[in-house]
Image (tube, rainbow, N blue to C red; front, top):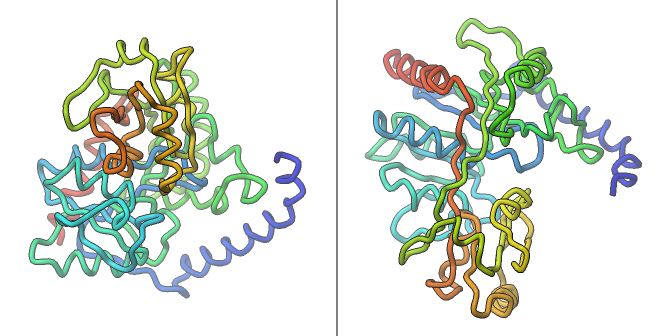
Length: 347
């Protein structure tokens, strides 16, 4: 696989050239970007998947929803629907996509919408009788048709964008210079005990890609994945310390499932890994059930919303995660609140 990626280097150069031309056309105003008279925060990455966008969106929801009417807008990746959809009581993971449906179930106080055309999606949200006061764009860093007011760029600790290369040789969707659009960078999935010296070294590598602006301070933050101490289903919960000791089936359909498996796995566990956003077919469900006879099944929260209707409810559990900033969380929160508050006051 590594050899094949190296052989495809000419395609990576071509792909990088095409994306650079596209960005140039947007930067110069030849292709039109649309701004909105409302705080819009875009969370995304330069690489393909696995940087922890969902936990970061949830962090922002928890921060902002007690003070503002919040809406999330996602593409709805691999959903079996089209166009703009605002989640309601009829929503399912197939209609919205797994991540938006997860937001809808966890945060009933917010609006959750999907639309591949973010410009149309925001326009439709603002046409609702209950208009949002803040819109969070999920995985929209490359969606240049909309110009967000604030960009949060995520990059994984073990795959920093500054050390990567363009697809298909590397995992970058666009050139590393795309980071200049970011107002801040969050290095995700760090070891919780990462030292300040290590943070400083990474910050120095990343900060050189950020252009100075007058509107927002350019900073780099560091976060880690904080696993809940319990697994849950609709009937109750179990302590993770006890779950780790019992024989079980671990199941995940996410981009990088290894940390999830490592956190829970014991010697006799069965493990099943599927592709990211996998749509479970009847044959998959039958295979899962055959592997989980007399065992509990523990999966990710994203997979749970797709599986709970197909597997015996008392058997299936999920492990919640949160994005936790390693330090300077008060500074991060204040930067976001200052942007939203200032933007709201200036409307």
